[in-house]
Image 1: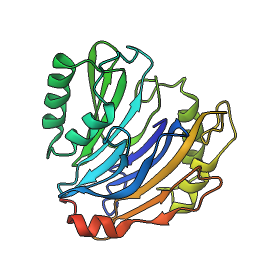
Image 2: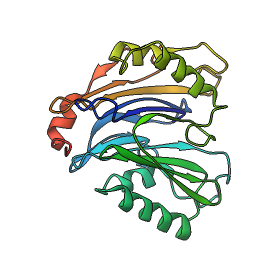
Image 3: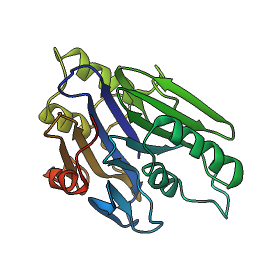
Image 4: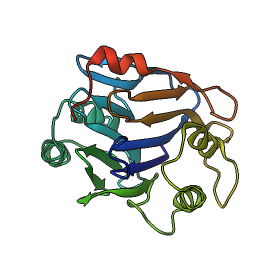
Length: 239
């Protein structure tokens, strides 16, 4: 995944809003969000079996982006499998302890793993050294090979422009427009020869009526479809 923007704790009725674009090699197969394990709703990487973004019935949100360092060793464990395992947790402490164990015992390429629960979050930066960063309510952005809320991050600048233009939380149309954008220093929706934006996800965690939208392809060319029923099947997130 390349862009993840999070609005946390800014409206009591909507504790979490997330917008994310997944950038990947075009030939890597993936499945749309579904209940991939009891109580876990996520997209699925059909090559390695992991996920890049998901939620569980306990109200835990998890996503992962890549970092260039350390490079992927030949026997590396999938970062997506780490994200999938994190979705079996109930708390941020559980996620942080899990990632600490896995980075100590298994070869892993660089990543940023983000978990959010109960109005706060943790971003676990792994660049050969594990650097957990806790964060609270507000607007937060992470992308590939950048630390959380890095002011020099081109994607953060684009998200900040959106936030400055709105009086409150962005609506679904606002988020879709962000994820389709080709403007700015670095396009949010990317198109290269073999690699680029392959899907997009919008989550609006409205209490009692959460919404999950997914574009199965570049969002500038593919419509967002409603996958909210998967959340109801898995069980309601904890308050």
